[in-house]
Image (cartoon, rainbow over all chains, first blue to last red; front, side):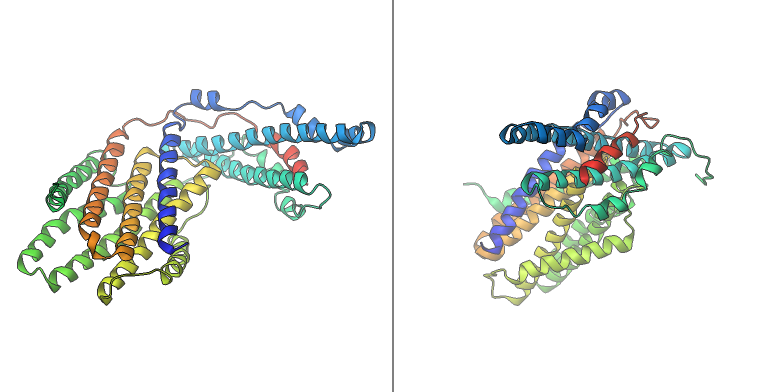
Length: 173
Length: 246
């Protein structure tokens, strides 16, 4: 393809993206009610059960191979749906936090800033989980190189506890 | 038969009026303090038109050529300031850190990619000046479009919040930069037989950008009503995600 073709492709993509972005911009959060209506509910207990390796092992040992593969596929689809919801909620949290940062100062802005940071870290973790999930489907026996990634995010679980607790800090705002 | 030159001149003549309206709206809503680079850009472009018109009346040749492209260079430099402002407005504290040096590094990286792309471009024009102008214009516009593209991708991934006026500025300038990129590439590839159509497309796309700016700045009256962090627990999501990622 000639370079002008590439430029025309890039330009067309940008215009499509601009239209989608304009549509998305109209659906941005306007109020707490918006946030609550857009939030996607999630049954964490059910999600944790789906990820329980002992349960998967039990199914593998007690079901015929074809049946196990079918159920495993269905479980993976449900897990994918759950992870998608967490991803959506994390993006919602980033947006909510940034709105508060734009229109508030002092302690509320600082709390919102921490909230945004943690929500962004969660979003990255979700992406890693999605990649791992795809790898498990495509290459079920392969070890995924995500252990190092997990080590890096090992302290997120501890720092999340501080997000919802008020912290006394000195500000110059 | 439509007189393209007449249409182009009519559209061009609306430019300073629309830009003045944009600058006035920005000033009236006190947004010129939040977007100083955008305000300076608007004032410069408003002042540029009568200046270039005066130069054109005195000398239509080399003086006008150099004055036009000198003003273009300043406009483009100010436009990068506007894009930096857009980045700073979206990537606020707590999200991705974007200092001037980081932004400059990103621009340099994108410039290298853009230069690589244009090295293989076919340019029909034999005139060295025009070839240089077109190639430089393509590099700059590719950089600007890419900067906006990167920001859109990051927003899609993380869900960043765009204030109405920030979105309007980015959208307007994105439309204009994309149109400039396409017209420049077409002109390089086809030659000066399409010069009139290219000029009209450029002028029209700029006025569309200005109208987008006016509409989004005007709409920026209402602010979202969120005063405190909604009470949801993100910590509960982490252990199952970590288990999944193993």
